[in-house]
Image (tube, rainbow, N blue to C red; front, side):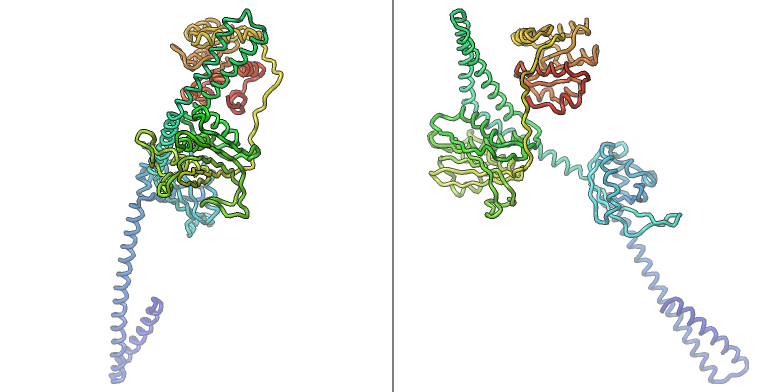
Amino acid sequence: MGKLEHTERFAELRKKAEKIAQQQLVTTDKRIFKETKEILHDLQVHQIELEMQNEELREVQEELEASRDRFSLLYHKSPTGYVTIDSHGIILEANQTMEDMLNVEMKKMIGRPLIDFIAKDDQEIFFARFNAFFKVPEKKHLEVRLNPQNKPLFHTSLMGRIIPWKKLQKSGESSQQLLVSVSDITPQKEAEAARLKLEGQLHQAQKMEAVGVLSGGIAHEFNNILYAILGYTEMLLEDMPDLSPDEQKEYLNNVYTAGTRAKKLVKQILTYSRPQLHQLEPIYVAPLIGEVLQLIRATLPTTIDIRQNLDPNCRPILADPTQIHQVIMNLCTNAQQAMINDQGTLEVSLQERLFERTPLPLPNMKKVPYAQLTIRDTGCGIPPETRERIFDPFFTTKDTGKGTGLGLSVVHGIVKNHQGAIGVESAIGKGTTFTVYFPLIEESVTEKSVASDVDYRGKERILMVDDEIILCQFYKSAFKKYGYQITVTHNSLEAAEIFCNNPDQFDMLITDQTMPNLTGEQLSKKCLSYKPQLPIILITGHSDIFPKEKAKQLGILKYMMKPVAIHKLLGAVREIFDQKQFNYKTKFYGNESKQ
């Protein structure tokens, strides 16, 4: 019975009671007395009914208060922070967890923009996504770092959902509100960083293992190169007067060829062994296979025949060149170690594969074009019980000290990270075939243009510094040949003194990085303090010791890796001097081709 009904019923009974009372003054009719008793009974029943309803209301009120207390406890003590904001990003309400996260009292938090508590570097990300939170009713996710008071930054995951009710403003217009849940994901971020670090260490350990396997062949190849350089140079020194110009040129060409081979070999070793940040770029796989096979050939006995069948028109893949190099190197090294008595055939092939009308050969592949890399050997083969575990980390069938079992697990991880697939087929006594699939892309690889008939000559004044005396002599002769006024020293302290005594005497500084006393970086800083617009070229043999980004921040215009061909160095010098205005950010870094 509703409240209104109770009121009307009570009013009706009241009227009847009053009427009966008046009648009782006139008569004591039994009928009236009977009616009075009935009315009094009805009033008593109604009173009892009201008392029972009041008791029910009290119980409901107590349950509501208990439910409110439970909600408040769950809301404020939840491990997730909650904050309610309006369409302008102003904090309207927050729970105690949010208060603890930001280390700010709730009353000081209310009324402030949420963005005040977001790290400055992440505020632009929040701005870009903020409006989307209100436009789409579904949950929206965003990762930013929060900046608590007197505490370090921490990583969070924000999840926003529009509150179904609307708050009425004083103007009468409704304002949407957003409930944002804030989860601290710093432990997950740290765990992911640790995982990536361990993965990098795993890859590096495996590469070092492979370099150890290759070291004997590399040393042998270097000895052959050095023998050619030393032999032809000795012949020139002994027989110079008796040799015709053509013979002298032939000998020098042979020396240059041997030196070029050594340079390429060093580059391959450094590319393979140096820890690097992995960056994906469009690459052609065929040239990369050629480089690896050239290095492998130097390490394999001549009793192993290497055959290659590479499609020169195979389209590029999106990959990290160093990691693809590592995949090919590991599989080829594995194949060589499987051949009994170092005898057999190593066959490497590359072709494009389409699977539009044929079944996919491996799980997790898609109906897209792939580059299919096949490495086949005629070795001992892999037993079936072993084949299922070959991609497990640290699993190896080699003798103790001859392998860590990292090679194939690293290969599997690299292929998977490139959205590829790898399969193996093997028969005991007949050999093993590894087939690797990488998704093809349509993007072409930009070829480096080679300038012809470049005029390297100039008259500018250059200060050249390198702690290797023989290189100083070489640079002096080369630059003088092309008309430059060059001052050369192998002492970095002497170079600093020469320049600081007369900065206007020089138009450019070319310096090595790793030197006694002052490094190239320190010398550059000192010279720039005297002449801020001084063009500087820094040459180094260790990119990890002094990275390109650091050189750029310092103001160094050009950064080159040793050994650098003299025409490339002269070209860089000429390029800088030919610029009327130096553009530090794009001209010499943004579009620079790899050395």
